[in-house]
Image (cartoon, rainbow, N blue to C red; front, side, top):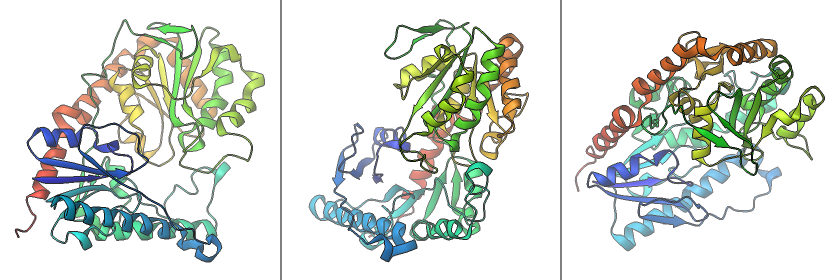
Length: 413
């Protein structure tokens, strides 16, 4: 079978699927943006994206759609060039819904099946925009802007034959007509690699400070430290935690750029803003904000941590929470739908209302004070990931079957 993956940051969500399909004897090719620096062993072509310089005032709400269309036609032309130069016409294209890359594929290859990785559908009437009263954007102008972001998503859905999304909660956000052709299969967690390690030890980057299993460590991880992932709530809970636990250390992993939500006030970052808000009530010698770290450092940290805090708006669930559970970490999560799909309170973790700062302090203090009482939760957390999200025994085989089944439908000729 001839399979083309299209993703501006390939391999991204396809890091396991593409090599697995190639190993099964399929001809696999990837198409990605020219400035993508990710490494892959998949034969890869590149497209150069140079968006038009539009007058944003003239475009108004059409600005997002214009950018997506620009990228879509760039990708379509790159696909046509691949077909003409290499004689490559895929049986199936696997692409991401987010950036317009798949909008015009059927104009290049009408008979090729398109499987769309459908990560998120923006809806002005869902709870996301008004979820956090501190940063609520539920006025008419915002709702119109969110609704305008549906244009390229709806076109991408119309131009696809089947859809793939990682969680049932994400699937529930898409238009109803998509449901019969939507497969819910998670990207997968490598539980053989992400396993509890009694002897794990982690040295914080750029320091001589190290922690091992048994040390009183509280962790928080987010690609970007921002309100969407509850960074503000976590920081506000810390003063009480550190006051009650004088030997505890907090390790915060995450960067300042590339967030999902509102930008921070000019001249600062969300990291700085909320750290400064509570700095006078914290022993900063026990708070370690270490930026983004290599995956092996993250893994060791999840094996060492006594308790891991994970918060999220009603939005895409982070891999890091599931990876922490696979490592046997005790996770205290926010009582929001994406998290509740995985964690049941008192069964395989703990849940706290997202905005309950005192509740967060109390839950974290309790978990730090008596880790042995939660051993059963840690074991159940790892068992949840093995049974429902394991990469090699569950998710990857299902993904492979989906791609091969869709590719086989392509009409002959």
